[in-house]
Amino acid sequence: MNTKLAASVPASQNKTLAAPITVCRIDTPLGTMVAAATDKGLAILEFGSLDQIKKEVDDIAIKLNTSWNIQQHSITHPILLQTIRELEAYFAGSLKIFTVPLDLDILGNEFARTVWQTLLQIPYGVTWTYKQQAEIMNNPLAIRAIASANGRNPIAVIIPCHRVIGSNGSLTGYAGGVEKKRWLLLMEKNNSPVQAGRLF
Image 1 (tube, rainbow, N blue to C red):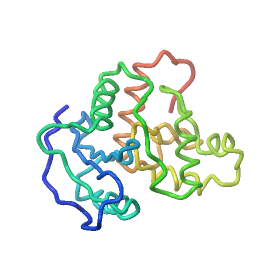
Image 2: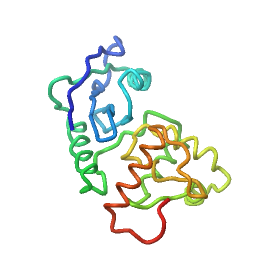
Image 3: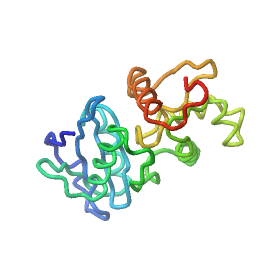
């Protein structure tokens, strides 16, 4: 995948109290993704351009009272390097479980972070319904709130919100677009040892 980056400027001129956030652009078979990492882990991975996620990066920088930068020519941040390597293996069909550290303490509230942690339990090649996700969270009446939190997932693909579908098998919404969701599910199905039952 091509990791050539677009230029940008720091989001904050405040005195830095934390390590700067590092941002890079990653080209994938489904289009450009933008990744942002703190010194603790990957905080953002979304389809789209830097302009589209700039506000989220700015929000993280403000919360950490730090700045952010883009590595334009070579990636040196270890979290971003691991993210790129694992995404390459995932899209090649050889990686089933991501191990890159995630930093989920910045974006979202406690409920949203619990929803995102639950999504990490969905195995490769398997789908859950929103109802199943709510039941696993022991919160069966919170389907709408859980679906809303899924839609705000800041780390696409790695936190697999694409593996949650409607009770009738419909793909429903996906922040990256329903066609990307369909592509990801078909790719995982074709590369998964789990073949029993209908995935969607």
